Image (cartoon, rainbow, N blue to C red):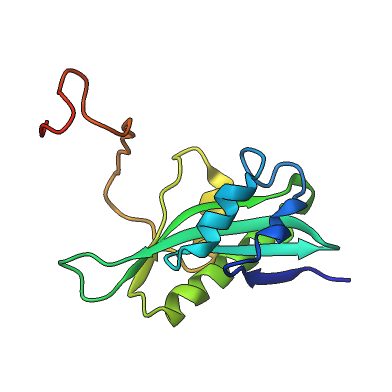
Length: 154
């Protein structure tokens, strides 16, 4: 039996009950999976072989007040070590990008580390165009900045 690639819908979180090692960063939380799949703006394409998830691509589509159409942010792509280099990442990313097209997204975008060459090769293989500008990513703790009382703008 081959690998089936598809985008999961609401109520299909049970499929994430059997995941090959190394696909996700952490164990899948059933309640978080249910909430993710129930949200119509969240999308999860999976590659399933013999009932086991061996790859995924996740994304969020969104609108912005100054953009003419929605966009898809590709959040993450993960493939089991046993399935890397076999086109699995390309397939799940392709399924996610196809969903973006169905949703009317103008474009999709993703960030990756400068040293993550396998991810860069994957994105180039799907037609991705490297942004000519250097990007710098920041992460923040949610909530008010340190020293700012809750409810007051920082």
